Amino acid sequence: MANAQSLPFLLKELRLTTMVKQWQQVSQKAIELDWEPELFLAHLCELETSYRHDNKLKRLLRESKLPIGKQLSQYDFNEITGVTAQQLKQKITQLDWLRQGHNLLLFGASGLGKTHLAAAIGYALIEQSVRVKFMSSTSLVQMLQKAKEALSLEFELKKLDKYELLILDDIGYVKKPIVKARYYLN
Image (cartoon, rainbow, N blue to C red; front, side, top):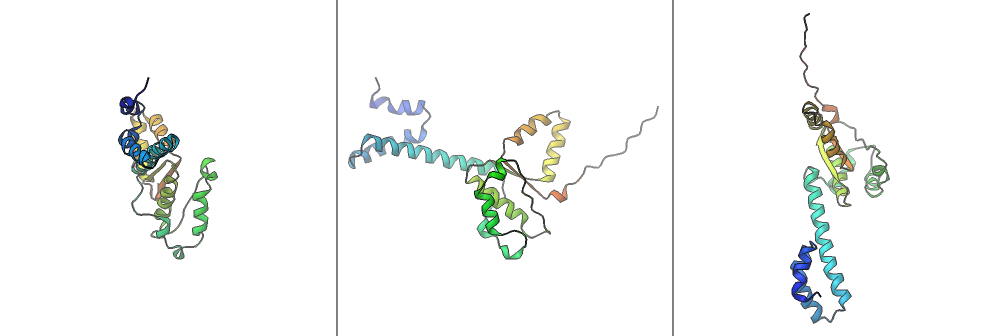
């Protein structure tokens, strides 16, 4: 039969780390405010889920490799034509295009903020728990070439496949490797 002394062990065993840290404090508050047991449990569960959600967002941000400080609210849409803030907000909130595997392409001259807009979309999607990866096209090509040489291309492609959105920056600047001519004499 469970007792109060076994609670920290049980919570730890269930990997409810926030509950392990908070249960005594919340229990005291529940006693003081005369909470029903259901409210006490709901409060503990809310603390745990909130902590896990925050950690998930931090992990998604870290692995995304998005450039820092690129938010949609910081972009001046007066500098460009062809796309509006409303259109991008729609893409951020209505994720059918993403779930269906459609692409979103941003074209324009250098310095107009294509990277900023792409990163801002990435940040907004991460806030919705979407897995995002940002990298330059050159980095992607180099990574895949190395993987092919190392016979690990399938593994690298599977790693990329875990992302719901892959943001490739500077597609027009992909450098092709210099291939030396090879001559064979018979």
